[in-house]
Length: 498
Image 1 (cartoon, one colour):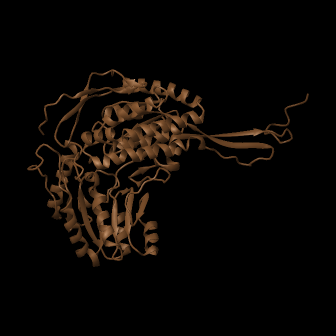
Image 2: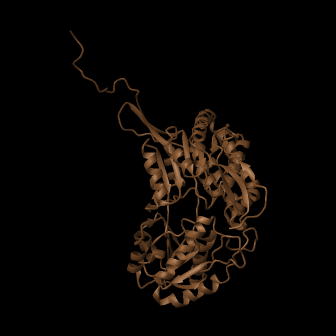
């Protein structure tokens, strides 16, 4: 891929409340996938940088927890205001850094501000329980922070991922060391700076940029009490093994191959629009993308034709253009991966109903792939079973509920599923039978920080949302105090006397 002649900036890790010179002189390039422009030379941090970040984070966490709840809430609210006010800058950064279309990236900033405000409201609600277990005793539990949380981020939604992981971590009283993806590190540096400017202790949130070596140093560091990771299954396994060496808590949001199940009685117009948005939004680079469309046989011809017509109208192009529906893939690596799966699909006998190409004639320097709909797909094909993370929709046909459930569950993943039907009895039956951590019925991909979101099977463990975020960011302490002197105390009774 050719590159434009520009003057890239130099980006340093954000440690202790400011950009700091890294220990290593190594760098990597942040590249605009829409045109090949080199945006920045970014520090490739090593274990020494991670160690320094953990050290200052520990000191900042102790200061943070010495503040009363009202002061911490005020910092979070100021941070939320800053994220909302800077959403244009943050959105443009992500658009240039990983190709997310601007109109969606702008929404990420607003949604992230709401996320932070939600967690600001939870700061003084980290409650334990009082249990009347023993007469004459007071027994209760408290929740306390783990100390320093390691946040290893994905590349596909940088602003939202940063805020949805960091906000609950610090709301629960922790500090954080964040390792953004080397594919899209730039907005994380700005978000950490905005938090510092909002009045957080210096070093409460630190950003160490780099690749796998940096991430491994975070996962392995003995000064980190918990790790939250979003990414691929193989990397998730390595993170889990590394964290287990020091018994860290882990929250893992891993891959998905989400079924989108459409029954004959569904609102076909809504289901069709949802199916296209659910897989082609962000060029299919979404863990919960509905990449497997399961359509009941009686409506399949009509529904598939509707998909073909609408897919042809999806505008692929410059992600900065407000009219663009779908931008480029985020990296050369991802472009090659998706292109390879297109070859695999053809070799396995799938029919390309629409798309299937790489529009190099109109976008010669960008990493663009056309939104692709595949029909005549069987469950044994790799495109029906493996996570691709690109704009490829595989259409399969089923006859009845039992077959739909069997197809939906016949993959290693269990992150999410979508079900379209007007029959509420069927909806609840399917919701109980489909193996997924989240079920959406007659809608797609609605999130809220107060609602659990996490996977089962190979899609991970725990949740970065709701009670899962609190569980992943805290530990429980149990206290029992005897207040009644008449209450018995466990002891040997025959040790006194001559």
